[in-house]
Length: 113
Length: 112
Image (cartoon, rainbow over all chains, first blue to last red; front, side, top):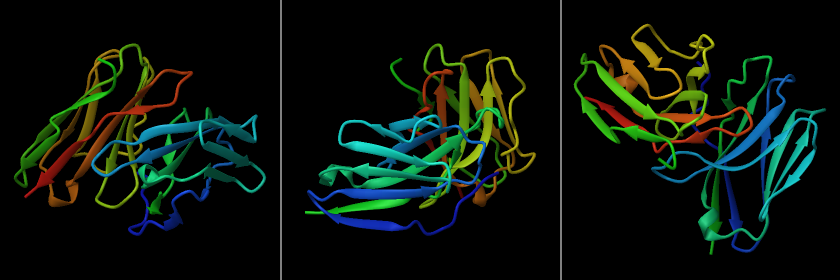
């Protein structure tokens, strides 16, 4: 099955700053994208999603941007808080592949107080 | 229940034994996923059930791995003749067509 590398990239930000986490996806046919947050010892938690007919979607303190031209997804977190420290995963799916959800490698976000 | 539940939360077994992991999806969710997550790594797709369609088994790493789902309810993931490399957290998620998948807390499997 699909697998990812051993070492996850890390983003360190100061509390109160904005964070931007990036994700490159592989399948140009993907039409649905999700960001998940995973805290230590827990399952992934849904943050925000976006469909391919949109390029931006906002939630509470979070914004997802989708650039289909370069197959790039980003998650912006405003006013980052210590509770935002976690591993963040992007995931993609497509009708063509039967809606199977494929995850990216993940990024560790560390918030410094 | 309110969310996806998985049991057991932790399982320690000896190499060569069979194990069975259980997932109870959110009621009414037609899709169910199993993923494997090794320590410090991302989520590796194993298998996907969608309604009455044939499951997508393309992620199962070997024939020692199998999964079943009864209708749109509980699913079990079975690993036969466990190996130390099978040690990981096994995550289950469920969804309906209009919603993102929601994950359970996972089962941590340790093969000694």
